[in-house]
Image (cartoon, rainbow, N blue to C red; front, side, top):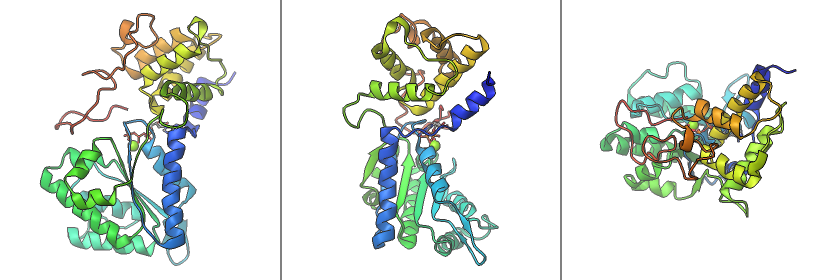
Length: 321
Ligand SMILES: Nc1ncnc2c1ncn2[C@@H]1O[C@H](COP(=O)(O)OP(=O)(O)OP(=O)(O)O)[C@@H](O)[C@H]1O
Ligand SMILES: [Mg+2]
């Protein structure tokens, strides 16, 4: 029998084309095509909670349009720049220079670094700019820093003149309120969220993801006496409709099932996996796979899917994945 390790490895690498992901992918692809065909640079804001697939989407684009090393220069069609946690202009510019392959990203004044980044981006023929973790601009920065970074972004976008996608947590929408020029450039928005495409409900989409991930398992998934409709609801509450948590749940469950040589993965195994992988306080009626569960979102204070609407203060992490 295959080892737990190799099953989990295969499972983690599996890229799923769920509707919200495909829609966001097609949006970005459309921007790239439009630019290639007409030279027009349109921009897009992608908002999604932690673990909905924003960074995965960026990496997917980078993989499909990889850096090419030519004799005379490199070509970097897609530039993915995650905003660093302390998002000063200097730090953001350095992050961009590093991704562009600049040998000394910290050298020079802020304005000379910015000029260098713009020049280098043109030299390597960047066609698409993906700015990830945009909430970091807001999280640590005081308002003046947010304005400055916003202005910096506007300048860089105007100078490089390629489609730019800004990705971050939903609270990034608030950040854009403080800078009108940036807001105007990102008037097109997409939420990376399940349950907004076609007829399928969010619970139904969660179940589809859950089952398609489970297809490659050596041990079958079972809904037991609950039925798949109820299982779908429980999976939704256990994951908050985020792909990362569906994967955490399932990878925990398959590990338990293989170690204990179970014949199937059912609600009991998922109950244990939820406590181990998602929320250690999630027991009894706070566990979506427990029979006493109340069928409500686990988004109250200190629960795993608590909504963080404002930037966390220093010392408290905003990330939960
Ligand atoms: N389309 C997908 N198919 C399979 N797995 C995915 C997909 N999208 C995301 N994942 C999984 O979910 C995990 C979290 O995804 P990702 O890091 O892209 O989320 P994020 O939205 O960038 O979160 P954060 O806001 O915390 O940075 C990844 O490790 C990956 O395994
Ligand atoms: Mg991310």
